[in-house]
Length: 614
Image 1 (cartoon, rainbow, N blue to C red):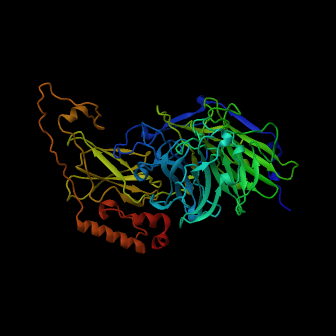
Image 2: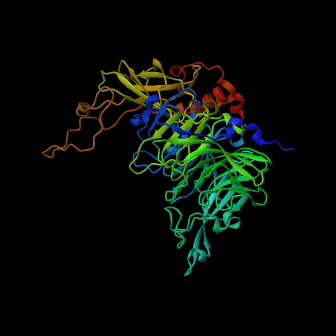
Image 3: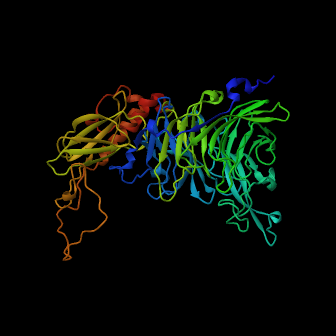
């Protein structure tokens, strides 16, 4: 006999816990990301600022995954933050011109990876492909749509139950007879939603489902030309989006749970035939919704427990499509389905409401329960409020214990989804080198070091080095704790060249900024008038003398450096090969004596020499 999942629910849960979150501004401690300022040694990076408010110690430790887009003041990219708002990684060097959606941690092949959809944004959907990055932040897989359809859409990059495939969707423009929608003088155009399960290793198509083959147009709650994103249905460039699939999940039986925003329904699909096994919500619900429970225009439906008699699912209830509302605020929900009741019933167990100052989320959004599976009843909930770029963490009773917001952008910045992963479950070790900029106001001044390593999670400290000629020995200046994305250090003397080494918590060196060091920037006499001991101020104008004369060239136009010779590069490759054989074990030499620490040392130190050999 199947075990009833409702036996897992304490009696108190029968009373819905709907907690209206209060602003609690007086209880919060504010932090602002280091990226509120320019990143001195990586001025090419402009990740969005994240301002964080924290009220309680019960916040789960972790990294926050976001992908803000539609911004003029910063860059569209995937970003990982810590819980104080410091940037850990921005994907801009890898994703550049693409907009990123549904950026998340993913356990592909039982190993930590990062998954995201890269593509271009259209009105309510996107065209792109799924990118999978490994722990070195190298793209290892790229998954694309199959069967001759349009490119993959933005809404989902979840992994299959066995973690070997990705669940993806396509917004496919198709011809349709839309006479019932008053398009009677020519061809109608439909945005058909297609679900594809694609093998990550091979890109093979494992399963496909088409909305128009299983769900009637009569289930739509939005009609042509009635909302911003639904489309007119008159031309191929504006097809009627009657279904709008936005999430997919797979259970142990191989069946699927999908969410359709434009029918305000959730559907359970057979993993073999694709048949609709039940509907929750909308105009054809198979469940009686108890105690005035309802939802609409929802996102992000997930299974947390399931058997033949009961299901526990979560969803993000937008309660609005920007034109129509079913409630006054959006909220995250946990719902129990009882298939044994006659008729079957749906009961709201818990709801996590937005803070009072957050407007209703007209689009996007998600809720993540931070504890796995059947631990849902004791789990904190992490919620992204969609087109309102705010994330909150709630205790099981609904209290807000964490709140963070992305910088306000005049263009209306949005964030489709956000996730949180425990810091113990994510180790990122980039295959590039740390970045360093050194500055001194004069050759008699202190030298200021600005250092960072985009994406590295394991840095505890930085070792600082300096020298005054290419052939000099490196001087070990100091060791300092890592502080945020960019660490700043002032040496009390001038060094013509600087180098830094990232260091693990056990004092093992990870990698150096360069083989030969970077030359310290010293402004010329005229520029130095606009500089202080930290750096030089920016300007937005040319200062042309009134007589039109050109300012004398007071500064040499070539900046001398210490380039690595082919022999030195070969020696570095040899060091890599030696460390592949296990030579990294117990290596405690500092950077001044061994030159540059290779990437293979990082892998050996963190993952073990057997991984390196494999």
